[in-house]
Length: 311
Image (cartoon, rainbow, N blue to C red; front, side):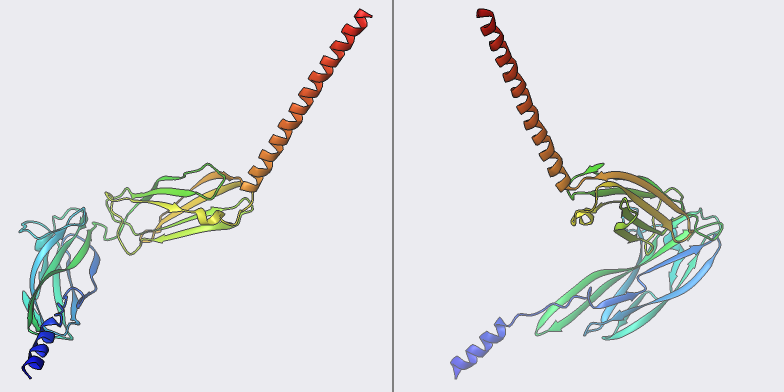
C-alpha cells in the first residue's frame, strides 16, 4: 500500500506545470488610432481590452512614446505629446472572459507645430495565478498607440515619390530577374501608398504583377519603402524574345496623388542562344574548311607551277 501511495505522489510530482501567458490572452481593439487634428482640437474616443484568459488580470496604466526607430520610451517626459492624452482610469482589474471600455481625451495645444506625434497608453500586466500548485507571475507590456497628424489645414498632404526603380539585368537570358525600388514621402504630412509593379511583354500582355498595399500604415518622410522583388516566375515558361517594359505605379490613397515610371530590358530565350551558338560554331567550321581548302589549293597550284618549270 505504501509503495502504491508513494508511486502516486511521484507521478503527481512528475506532471508538468504550465505557465499561462497573458500576452496571448489579452486583446486591444483597435490597437492603433490614427487621427488628423488641428492645433486647439479636443478629441474624445474609446477602445476596449478583452481578457480571454481563464483568470482575472490586473492592469497598471502609464504613458509612453513611440520613437522614430519604432522603439518605445517609457521614461518620464514633460512638454511632449504624452501630456495631450488623458484616460478616465489609472488602474483596473478585468475578470476572466470579461472586457472593459476605456475612454480617452486628447487636447492639442494651440501652439503645436504641424507634424506626426505618436503618444501611447502602456498597460503593464501584473497578476499571479495558481495552476496545479505553481505560482506564475506575469509581467507584460501592452500598448495602445496614437498616430496623431497635426495639420493646419486639417487634411493629409503627403507627396509620394519614386526615388529609385530598376532591374538587375538589362539583357535577361535565364529567369533571374529582380526589380529594385525605393519609394519616399517628401512631405512632412504622412502618406498611405499603394504600390503596383508589373512586367509587360512585347505584345502588351502583363506577365508579372505585384501589388503592395501599404495603406494600412503611414509612410513618413524619414522612413522610405525599399524593396527587391523576385520576378523570376514570369520567365519560367520561356516567353517570347523581345523588349519588355517594367512599370511602377505608386499612389497615395489619402491624396490620390500618383506617379509612374518605366524601364526596359531585353529577354533572350535560352533556345535562341543555343541556336545562335550552334550557327556560329557551324559558320566557324565552314570558314575553317574553306580556309583549309583554299590553302591546299594554293599549295597544289604552287607545286604544279614548279613541276612545269622543271619540264
